[in-house]
Length: 494
Image 1: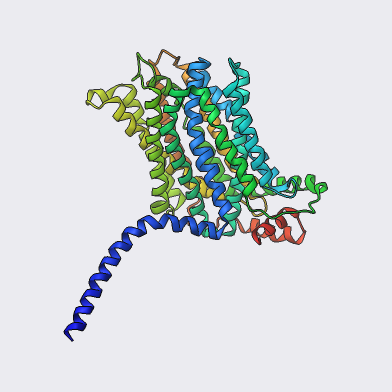
Image 2: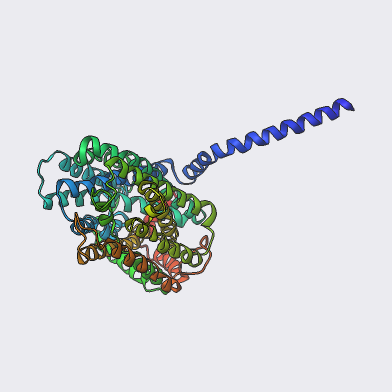
């Protein structure tokens, strides 16, 4: 009896130790199980594509590109902050025509494949444009803008192609929609963290042109995604039907956009982004100014941005683990309010109020950047999930690209609006007297979208929000043998 009791006691103690060990190992293995689950539910090549496009090309490469381009415009081309802000908008123009890339991936297969050739083309475009910027001496600003825009086009084509895969999987597996968006966001945030941590060091060691040369590596990996992506082969595709497919896709997009449940969120997404004017270039020039600003070095600027990436990563984790099940409208109200208030940190920094409280510039700007990036990611995540749920079956890539294009038009409006404000207030390479007015104007405009939240649905973010008429249109299209839907159906059944 006593021996039995002792054995039971030992088993209880051992069980407690196993539970403690299990709790420790769960923290380590849970992310791996999550990746494995996504790979099993979709395909490992899809997960690999997301990691390359979002993590390496847009995250790591985007960080190198941002810091490299900032210093390239400032130190090599020697342009004013307002001009640099306008040029940044020009470089982003390929992102405005994302519906075109999405439409091509949906209706125009190349050599029997709908996604892989576009990854290959995007990778080649990125490699060539970055190498040209790296090796050409004294490149005129017009040709530099052309090369930077071509590199941006390569990133945009890769982005819209992987977005089509994400949107398609979100429709077929709606319960995993938030997980797939979290995978995209986490990959981007971690890649950006690594990129910003190293970008300043590389700009200091090899200069912005050398950084452009390194950016050919992420573009080459995008090319590799095009080689490895699992996708069904369509040997008997009739190219004579392409024109009709373009017409059908256009009609499907227009029919979808006419529903209030679809166009109202689109209006909100555009205005919420456009009204938050971007004055990054003015702040960047001030950061590196030796007289009026804190005169940060390249390494310091890269490190500050890397800390911001940690904030972005925390925002993605916070959304995935705590906020993803909250209604869109309630969540966006608090995030938009915090987004406006967080901009006051920039105002305190430029007015040097932090020094009055004995807070060093470096420490204060680290807090500023991390808080701003975290709230910015929290603001972006529900909009991405909402966008993926608005895509009608059959043209997922095209319609998701259209929604992202609306967002990018908002970003372009924000950038050019910020450039106009900087020019109007006479903020130059060496004059920053009115920079605080630009920041205050931006902060006021950031809270104005609160008046437009009635455009966002209140429903459960885990449920389908597409109108029944659109879902019914899919069945009608299938009865009419529209190729767009049959193509997607064949992919889903693979």
